[in-house]
Each structure stands twice: as structure tokens, then as C-alpha cells.
Length: 285
Ligand code: SAM
Image 1: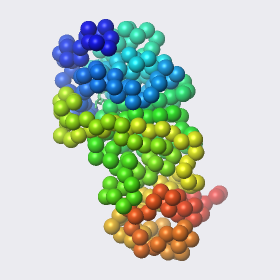
Image 2: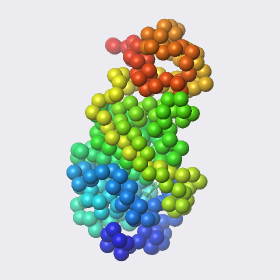
Image 3: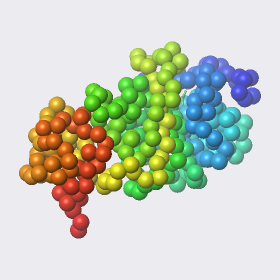
């Protein structure tokens, strides 16, 4: 027994099922169930929500979520070696856990969960940013999720919450902060994981705002921000000149200085720029 439930301790689970961690799958496991329960609590009240977990692995965080009273957990795991262990957890929580053996990048996850939905995951580092960008840029807003509680490498977490003027401010900060509240809720040293990664990690908690902070078309904002930060050392007029020849006039119309660099421009400025660029990037048909 492990303390939070009647299942065996994770070290024993890993040894019995021979779950040696695979680097290619970004496997750095959390084996301390008190810690996984604490991460689950960062997601707030789970009793009213269906939770998507990407990459349950041997199930430490899954057990945390279930022990904390999640209404239902849908866990998507690419590594088939983890399935027998996850089936044991499902048996201990009848009707509460559905395990899908799939690649999270290919899954129509929304259809698998009833609203309200939360996403909680210790993400594999190799697909973490890609998944985050997708969750942040659904076709419509509010998104299908109410909150996301996600473990990243600390360097990625810092990019998500970065403020203008800092070296880490860029696309991730803008897409994260435009329509959500994002904060670092916990940092963890490498030793918290088995095997320990090379870097620190951090849990970021996102809450979806009902509407964007500033009006903009998502596709246009994404394009403008990608172009601006693609050449972040250049002045905006140079970095964005490929988008339209009259970029200087448009920057001025948006209230920006053509000589500014992308990292000096606050979220509001990028949204203003997206609004005056709509006819160039996403013209009405
Ligand atoms: N949740 C577990 C924990 O906290 O101990 C494991 C976290 S580990 C960082 C990432 C997990 O994601 C691994 O179990 C790995 O097999 C799985 N994984 C990697 N790529 C995946 C993908 N594309 N889709 C679904 N799961 C994936």
C-alpha cells in the first residue's frame, strides 16, 4: 500500500512490470505519490470535471488525480508497456479511468471527455510545446478546457509567463497570456524524477479567460508574432517587411514604433498590430 490508495508503491510497480524509462518517449517518472497528489491539487476541484492526462506512464499522477476525487480521467499513453499497470489502476477505481493507447498528437481528445474539462499532465518534453500551442489555439474561444495544469522544463515555463522586455518573452508568452491566465505554481528539482532530467521542471497552471484580453484574429496574431520573433534582434519594420511593403505605416497605425524590437512590444501592441494586418494576412473572401 502506498498511502494515497491501496495500490502498490510505484518503485515496486516499475520493477514488477520492468518499466525502464525510455528517453525517446520523454520518460521521466514521478514516483512520490504525495507529490503527484499535490500536483493534482494544483488543478483545483476535480470532482466536477473530466480530466485529460497525457502520458500517464506508470500512473503516479493518474493515481493522484483519482485519489483527489476526479470525476473521470481519460489518460492517453503512447507506450504499450504501461497498459497493464494502468489497467490495474482502472480496476481499483471502477468507471473512473479510461486509458487510450495512442499518440496524443493524433487524438481527437475533446470528443473523449464531457465538459467541464481540465488537462493535467507531466508532459513528455519532446511534444510538450506542440501540444500546448494546439490547446492554446483552438478554432473558437472559450476553449474546450477550463484549466490546464502542466509540467514543463522550467525554461519553457519561464517562456510561458515571461513579461515584455525579458529575453524569454516571445510567441509562447503571447499565446499563453492573450486568452488565459498563466502562472508557475510549483518548481521541481531534477531529483524529483526517475531518471532525473538534466534541468529543473515547473508546473504551470492556466485558467481560460472567457474572452481574449484584447481583440485580434488568432491566425493573424499567430502569423505576426511568428514573423516578429523569427528575427527578434531586428527592428519591427525590418522583421515584418516580408508581410507587406507598407509595414511602417501599419506599425504607426497600431501605435507602435517601427524601430522597436519584438521583445519590447506588449501583448496589447501585438493585438493592435494584428487588427491592422487582418486584410493582409486573412482577407475576407
Ligand atoms: N505521468 C507520468 C509521471 O508523471 O510519472 C509520466 C510522465 S513522462 C514525463 C511522459 C509520458 O508521456 C511517458 O509515459 C511517455 O511514454 C508518454 N508519451 C510520450 N510521448 C507521447 C505521445 N506523443 N502521446 C502520448 N504519450 C506520450
